Image 1 (tube, rainbow, N blue to C red):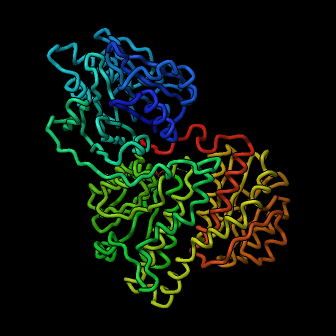
Image 2: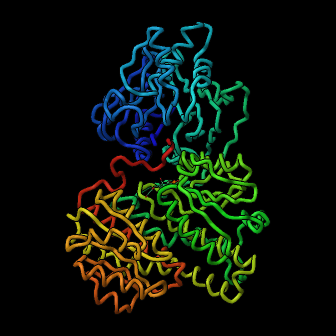
Image 3: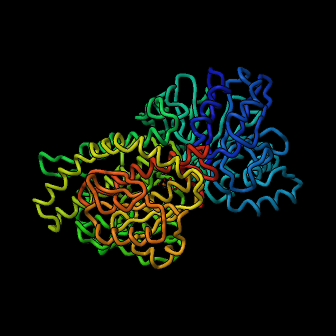
Length: 617
Ligand code: F6R
C-alpha cells in the first residue's frame, strides 16, 4: 500500500530511488514520483500517474544530479490516480517535500484550519495537508527546526502513516516517522537507505533498523540516525538487525512473472515451513510458540482465527483441521467485520491472526481489540518482524520467503502447512489424535512437497492448454466440499483478482440453493473432487451440472473414473488424506488463474486496483 524509498550517501540517488521503487511497485502502482536535492539546495520534483517506467520517461534528466533523494509509488486512497495527486507533495513555500504511505484520518479538519491561515492546495490528498502542517509549524515560530516541526505535525494527526520528508534548507537530512505503516532504515558505509521494506537496499547492506510504532528519526551523514518518540521526543537507542533477505529471493530467477516463480517455489516453501518443526523420525512436531503456551491452548474455550482474503481462506481450512484433529471449537472471522461488531472475547479465548504481510490494517486492528479484551494472541505471518508478528504473544513464521506477486500463492500453502502442524500438535497433546494416526499423518505431511512437485510437472502443460479455452469466459464457478470448499473460494479469488473474470466459490452442495440458475453451456465450473472427501456426493453434483450443459473442469485423483467420465477437462492430482488435499489441489488452480490472466494480457504481478500489503482500512 504505497512504497517509499529514500537515500542519502555517496551514490547516485536517482538510480537508488528508481531501482528501489521498482522493487516496491508491488505495494501500489497507480502513480510514482521522485524528489532530489540539486547541487544548489533546491528540490527537484518529478511525478506522474502510471508506473515507475512512466516516471523514468519524464525524469531521466535527473540521473547523476544528486546524492540525496526520495521516491514514492502510490496506491490511491484520497483522490484519483493523477499527476497532481502523486507524491512527493510540496509545501506552499516549495521548501518541504513529503512522501506518505497510509491515511491521515483528520486531514479534513487540518485542511480547514490551514485554509483559514491562507494555505492553498493543489491536490485532493491527505499528504499535501501534512506537508503544509509542517510548514505551518515552522512559520509559526522561526526557532522551530525542521525535525521538530515534523514532530509537532505528527502529534496533530491521527490515522496510519509512514513518511519521509526533506527540507531544502536542511541539505543532506531526511526525516522519517511511522505509525501503523512499516519503514526500514538500511545502514551502509557512509550511506543510509529508507524503504517500506528492505528489498530496495538488500544488495547494499545487511544492517537495518525497523522503525517502531510512534517513532521518528532524523537521518544525515553527519549525525547518523537519531531516533525519538513522536509523542515525547525521548531519545531511543537504535536496534540494528541483520537482514536475512537475499537479492536472489526478490528477483524473478528466469520466470516471466513473480507469481509463476512463487507457484513453482511451493515444494521448497512448504518444506521450509516444516523444517526444524516436523521431526518424523522422532515422532514429534516442535513448535516453541505452541509448546511454551500449551496451557493456553489446552484451556481455551475456543480458537478464533482472524484474517483477510487468501489468509482468511487458509483460516477456514484451519478450522476444519483444528476441529477434526484437536477437537477445539474454532471460529473464523474476517478481521474487518470482527473489529466492528463488538465481539464477545474473554481471556479464555485464543486468537490466531493469519497474515502474509503482517501489515494488514484490518487484521492488526482486530488483534489489538482482542488483546485489549484479554485474549491470548498467536500470529502466523510470513514477513519476519512485521507489525503483526511483533504485537502477538507468540507465533509461527511461515518461512515461505518473500512473496512479491500480488496474488498470494506460496504464502497460502505455507499457512496451510503451519495450521496442519498446529492441529496435529494440539491433537496429539490433548489425546484426540492417537499415536498411530499421528505418525501416519506426519509421514504423509513430510511427503507433501514431493506431491506438489509431481503436480507441477504433471499438470503445468495441461493447465496451459485448458486455460487457452477460457480466455474469453466472463464467469466461473468453483465448487468443493469439506476441506476443499475453502480451496474453491481461494481458486475463485485467484482467478478474479488477476484475470478480472468474475468467479464465485461455493460449497458444492450449496449450488442447488441458487448458483445452479447460472449454469448453461457457457458456464465453466471448476470442481475439486478428490476420492477422499464426500466423493459420491460430488459425483451427484457433477451430474446436476452436466444435465444443464455446464463445462466441467475437474480436479480429481489419479485413476479417477466416475467424475472424469463426465468432465470436459480433467486435472489429476495424487491421492492424499483429505486434510492435505487443499494444499495439493490449489496448485493447478493457481496455474489455471495465472495462465488465463496471461493469455488475456493482464498484468499478473500487479493486477489493477490491488496492492500486496493493505495497510489502510
Ligand atoms: C489474495 C491476496 C489478498 C491477501 C489479503 C490479506 O491473493 O493476496 O487477499 O490475502 O489482503 O493479506 P495478508 O495475508 O498480508 O494479511
